[in-house]
Image 1 (tube, rainbow, N blue to C red):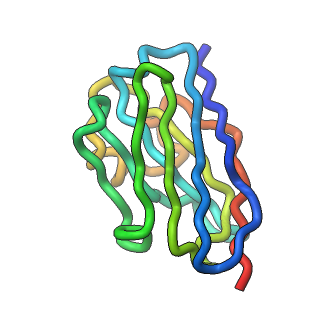
Image 2: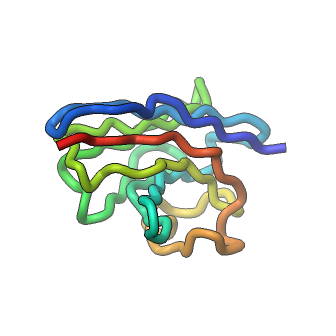
Length: 132
């Protein structure tokens, strides 16, 4: 059974930084791209960032490009999201996700529809609140 457990959320002032972590178990982590998504109140879940199974390729939404950095440690089975220059509009619940198929590209994760069968697993989410 696949489990994804996020941590690192919290309350931060605008301009500040947070680092999210997502620890995975129950899958051959090094074979799977991983992604971060977020959902603000009253809005649909949206793509934030994805990273290939090797870590060599990354893909970002335009809204976070240049401010957020996704990385992974395959030995620790963990994916990270470093969030800098945070803005109030970044406030949301952040989820990590694994695709249903191994060797899916990071770019492909960026166009998958949250809730579709393209995804194999989701974490429970961690709240990020950015105050102005």
